[in-house]
Length: 74
Image (cartoon, rainbow, N blue to C red; front, side, top):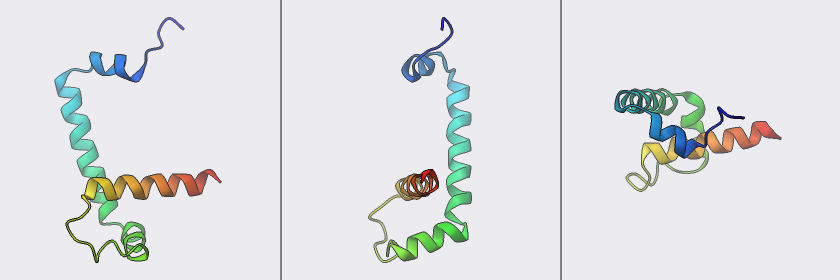
């Protein structure tokens, strides 16, 4: 496994342009997921809309994806 690196080591090798592209991709994904009907239904089920400003879109999307993946794992 001479070519295997940890995530931290991999991050050291990322060029700034790659990190910028990753950020842009994540931003696009957040917007797409945030506008999806499944995400909006998930928000309503958890009454997240009634708590504006308390949680960022980034945090909401991460929670949504985590719960969705956990559900799929079972």
